[in-house]
Image (tube, rainbow, N blue to C red; front, side, top):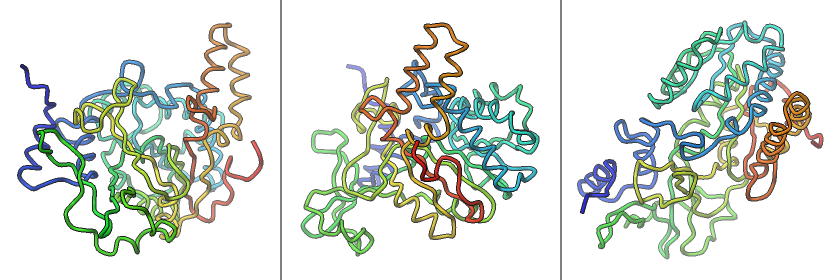
Length: 369
């Protein structure tokens, strides 16, 4: 019988045999960004032929509204010249192309914009270079946010934070132990807990979570993206984060794998499925605030898009569209704003991190949608 083990699983098993069980965060990082076998390194995972569909691929309205939002915020920043328009994880580039097309209506914005795309995937970067070839905006690619030169900036991160590696700890009778990936007695990859308890871990938790029951799971991200955003934006910019997650820290295992538009076993075929975990917006906000940035939101994606006028934009598109296309617009509007299990309206949130002097931001004011 042919070996069904993925190439990356062979590498993960080798590492576990050599160094012992690996933390969930290390496993997740290898699955997504291993330089040869990582999920994001050699494929285009977005769209009907891929594994998942993001909001910009559902409708042009999503990117267009973000473009108008960016241009309005740029004006609030004093309309700086040479503003760095940064997208973290731009995928196919659909969001930014729609955004810049819509932002043309704001006089001077495109002339001031310099585009910086942060993309680790060579496959997606090649696709972006092809699609942005005709764009009359200077464009540079980077593999990390830290590579982007300092200066006034607008940062967009749509479904980017959820793929950053997440650590997990499990509550046992003697304290919290980090959750790890090991090779089980049946030879398969399996979740387990590290033998030693994490020292002083209870003291790092919100007070209301310190009495967690045995078996509870707590997740956190050690990536420094929130601190880096806060450091850069507190004096010279604004970031918009759109992602799925929760607004208050809690307990639970949110690690999930998606392949072929269906959920699958996170340990089943390392490197062959997308791994994500819910964004802890509370922790993200506290990290950015601790370094001097101001937080706006989070609010639901539904409220964010409605306040920016997505219903009105949908009606304008429908007025010029044939009947079959008009129905597609209605379905896209529902998908982006609906609150049920098939919609993105409540599960997805919008939050901004900003220079405190910028003031109230569009859509984050407390008026009802």
